[in-house]
Length: 86
Image 1 (cartoon, rainbow, N blue to C red):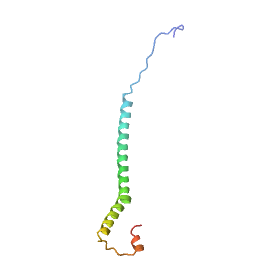
Image 2 (image 1 turned 90 degrees about the vertical axis):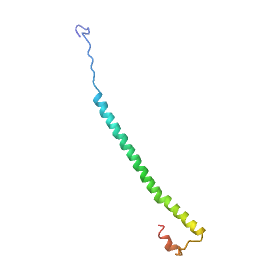
Image 3 (image 1 turned 135 degrees about the vertical axis):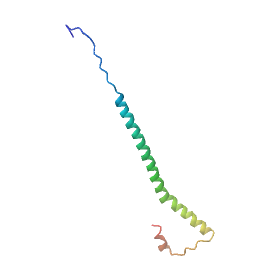
């Protein structure tokens, strides 16, 4: 300012191209990590569900089918047979 009158104007610009590249790369990495984490979680859930729920149900179905066809030959007493369940 010269004698309280503006002499000119200054325009300040900044190139954000490099920041946008870095942010895009970080976003891509985050998406990849999130997808892998989700797939790994699904695998763990499936394994636990299979082991704790589905396998006993399949075993129960097979034994009930054997019992229905009178082919069940396991004559162990109830207490010793329970050890394998727990």
